[in-house]
Image (cartoon, rainbow, N blue to C red; front, side, top):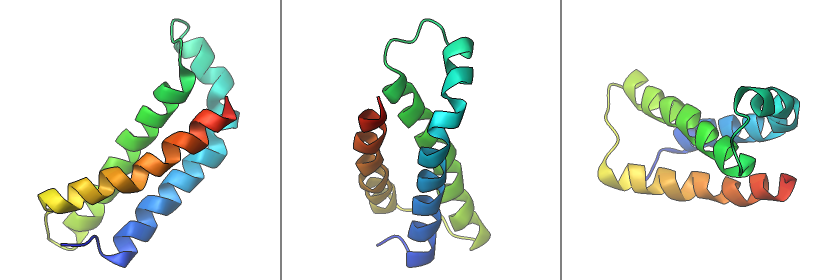
Length: 89
């Protein structure tokens, strides 16, 4: 099963929003997590965690559950943002 277009759009918009806000929140993150050596990985992982809730919620609103293939596609979809975050640092 392929992720429905509207769910894919919601995931992409959420990732884009958080990518845009990364620079704003970076000073806070450096204070909150002083021992982190790779902030791009921290930020990417936080973004994926947040976006995963959007992904699952979108399915839940349709009274559906994502399949294994949907989760695999979600992983591919968000992975493209790892490079964008790394480029910021």
